[in-house]
Length: 75
Image (tube, rainbow, N blue to C red; front, side, top):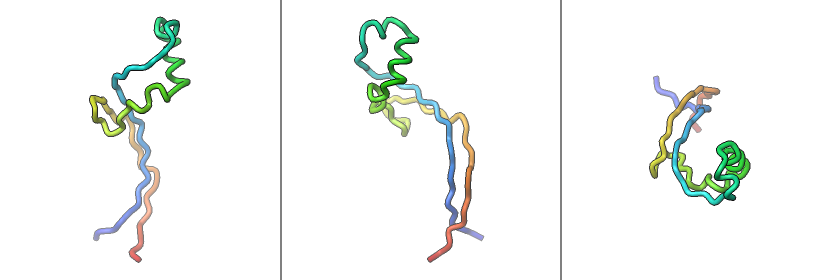
């Protein structure tokens, strides 16, 4: 028997990629300050993140869970 289902899935994904960002010199010289600065201002790097894993982005799914399943009734 074949049925159509709607699935809700949650994934935890790790991305590793390189990009150029503009930051103050004082931030660039301190790894912790750089991390905090980039965490606070995602606009500096978010456009460079390719969620499909393209453009040299390393993508690793660390965890996946099936949260909900529902049978879709034919109209």
